Image (tube, rainbow, N blue to C red; front, side):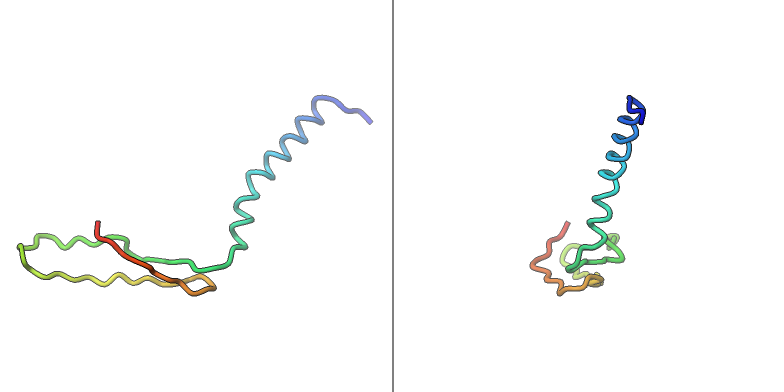
Length: 75
């Protein structure tokens, strides 16, 4: 059996490919809550001082565990 630089380069290439793919495979199997928001921002346009404005953001839990929202803040 012939061993040399080509064999080593091949093994390093395989190892590098596995290391690049591993994080994606590991994340694919994760369980837990996962929030999905259809729109991340909303433009109210021009608002007069003292005028009340309101917008509802819909947050869906597409995970497989309860999603707890512990706080919100304005931008």
